[in-house]
Length: 486
Image (cartoon, rainbow, N blue to C red; front, side, top):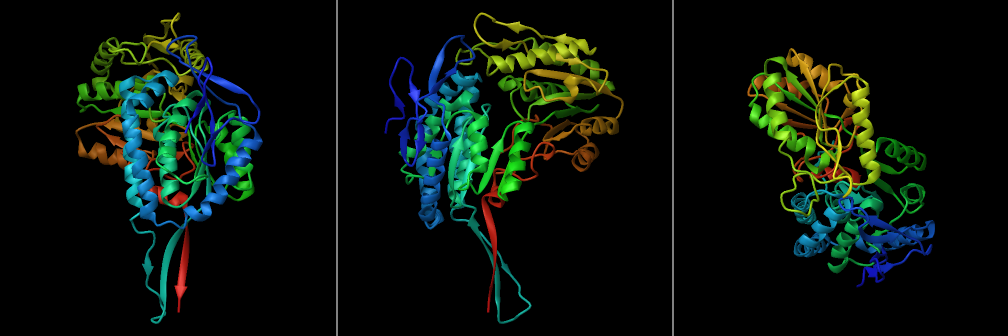
């Protein structure tokens, strides 16, 4: 089925009740390539409340039959979608790179992860969904089972436009829910191509729906719509909390994954080469545009100078450019707005007294939204660049005397998503595991990333204290029924 209408710019449509349809507003907006000024990737729909209502209503009707299918049958649809996505991996990865800037290698790796997510959750259709519980009545049977929550609203960001939509939709679908997704406008074209893989896998009409447009309009409509039973969101803390307030008012389930200000601790006994490589990969790949990206680098004084020297040597080797060009290690910021945000934080770092060790400048200005990888040295944990999430390629180094001081500094944040330590000492590792307030604990590995079969989520202001991915996803996308039979 045609996902687009043809004009000078390819226009992508909404996906509602198994069909690709234009918004009733007749309005569209363009998705632009941040690597090449003026290049348009495609157009997407600026949808209305009516469009969303159609999608939510379709999802409600479809859910009645979808939930009655055997889990193995629902899993077969996910397996078909995985194979189709795998066949189209290069096209979808290239679209991702053109829409939000990460290198083609990173985009292809993310799309491959999407394939693996679909296959993992396909298997969930054959796994247990309850427990038998001993009853005090010897003649009774007491057990639990799980049922889908219903229609799930999905709101996703632009930084992982394949993986995040799929790690939300795949578990929702396998457990018998139907979905309406509102992707980030910056990567609406990538999401449309992913949805087309699901369409071509033969999912019944209405099981999956996509509505693009304004986050303020469609997101608000989603959380307040009578047909939406749960909402899963990844994005900013401000928007997440607004959605949570509305969800609580309506009495529906909500799941939030939000910001991070992730520390890496480099202990005095660390393998410095490993720590440097992981700090650069965790903090600067994807132009630092990851909620799990390393941003605070806390180093014990005994190795601080050697670590700093090695880090700066490696950072100087980074090549910045178009993610589709061979040899590019770091692409542009995802948009002009995001570039300006990063540049404003760099200026604030200078103004507040941090020492700029490397970078800090806009580059390739005539081509796109590029900024140098940037490294600051900070003498205070209270500077803005140390406290606030930047979502860009900016590292702040801090020197400490002891591991205890390092852990205290690492925990001195409103966020608690991911944290890393580099050490060879088992005592240091155990102290880190026991005392660090973060949902993801990484030892001798970069802060960014977690395997798809493991729970993902944060503590403190980084999440709503639920978990995504792995078997943990069943907790949000289902409700428990306790059954007593006499």
